[in-house]
Length: 355
Image 1: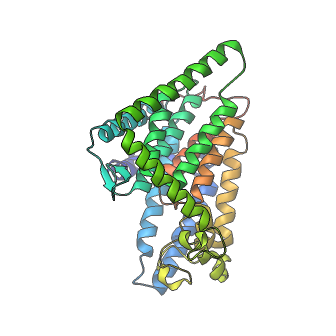
Image 2: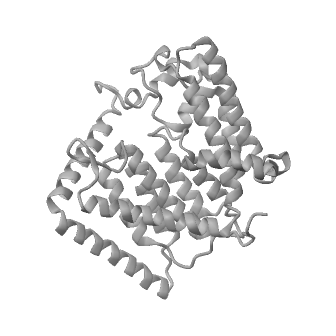
Image 3: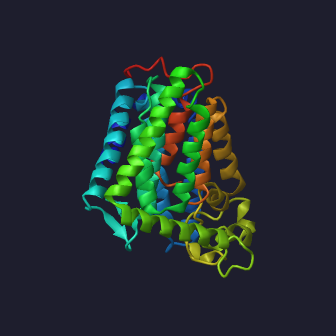
């Protein structure tokens, strides 16, 4: 609601942010071209299939396009970034409190979803929040990491039993092992403190909710085993069919210009739902032109970021192969945050109050 109100206010009072010069300086030309392509293509399909839900997709992408433009402008403000940093950390703590007070929602008896309507969306928000906190620490040149926030967020993701997000957060923590733990004496001691924090937090959670932890572990193990079994060719339902990947090769004629993002029942596949993956789904929906534009934007945005953020992006990318994130404003926002850190510069020293 606030972002929707922000859009016309920016157009009225800050019209220069919609200029070609502003877009070029912030690497937005290619990204906006991609959004325009999605909107035009879905408009065409809406004419062909007037009862389809293409209008919803058009609304999402239009909203996200303006939101990203405004967000790119606002993150030039150091105080804005500090506020986002504090808010995201606070939100994770609040979700943990809600969990321990047993006030959150569940899907069934096991899959926790906090104050959200879906466990995958809940864990996805927590995952993006953790990554955003990490990236903002680099942008603001903060000397210490909020390890406790990472750990609390990780526990919330485990509670959701979302295997895709669990894979992403696992890669995130492995990336931290490679980039954050050094071998100097002081940093080795700091590393021991972090490992001790892991142990204390884990022991506290187990003693407080031992039965629930065991139950969740067994449930997660079963889900992971089911996912692995579904990769076998003789499985009753393959992983490709479950996640909608079969739609891509069964509708290969659409890979040229795209099928549009709606009326999924017209596409051949195991189910009538969308492809549960971000970039593979975009390839089907928007064809070679869409995939080319978004790949080019990603390359120009992330080619010069430091190694630690390249590894963090890999965590985000791998997760995006299991869930459809393209309509989520925060997904694109996190990538734009990453693009503001450059090799050799490391931080955003030139941050200032926007004029």
